[in-house]
Image 1 (cartoon, rainbow over the protein chains, first blue to last red):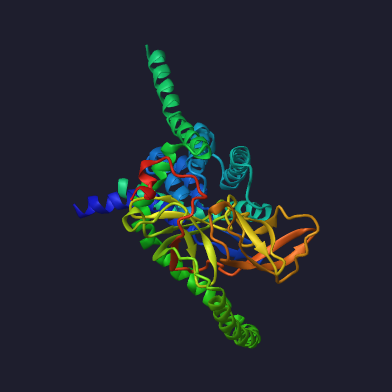
Image 2 (image 1 turned 90 degrees about the vertical axis):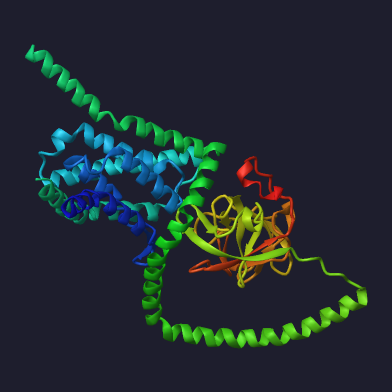
Length: 168
Length: 288
């Protein structure tokens, strides 16, 4: 029974990890004194688990994590669920190719997809709300998003191995 | 036979991969409805706010703790400069205090002479701030009080330093207020000794700007900014901030209330009718 409980908790770890990163995002910090920025590592978690273990972070969870993020961070409602679910969909459609790529190539794909989704999100904001956040903010946000991916992938890899160990 | 079986299996796998499509569309529809200010979404947001308020309150503790620690570390390195500045400020304030005492006496005497009756102040109550959003998308706060304590749409939030914002959504136990720094905040103000009438426009940064200025305005750095009372949302005379810089015709305002680490705030109901009444039954604080 204890083993089963532990197994369930470990299977929920990607969800808790994603939740932790949303909470971390509510903590803003100064980037060399010129921009207030936030660590948006949830993209990395979704990208990683959509490739390697989609069962433990399914689309319903991703959708509601997006809703929660929108609410907690006061982002226009629906933007994060749309962006996160699109990221999940793109990765799922190309999963067979992505899973066989080396880490560096996966990272490049991540940079391209997140870049495209960033632009889509900004266009949506511009069309529907008529304004977008400052350029410096967006730049630091995107650069941090890319730089942090190796760390996020390492953490997610560790969690995924742990899940695999308990499922075996 | 086996070919057919593999074909079906492949189609099934491909269909499985398209499961996220309805969720993508759902997110997009939600976003469009939010942008259109659809009553369904507003009602959903208010209900979510009610439900999430205790969670956010608990969650915000470690975040607040971390932010406080980060601030105390950074202020440690500026302590000498800060002390110097505070001493300077203290001297200026002392001279202002003397002037204020004299003005209070004068004002009392003149009021008696003219038989002036002061305007009644609005109903006032203190509320706790549950969540403070300082994101590049929105500048708002969630307060711990709704219809249950008589919070109404349009109630003004002030602190000891000055104006913070006004209530825009009211739930049964919580309410949401936008700050004067929010992108959608447009506030009629008076600037300086000449009482120049213009608008204070938020841009989601900590420094709102002055817009709709009349031609040939004489506004200088350091001029005092306060509410004008026009439009009937805010009463006149609430201090907001002072002019920080003038650059290429852009007047940047430094707020008195920087809204950092705020725990409590005063909400005042001035019974002003400038805001449109809410269409939603759950938000009609006015009915109570």
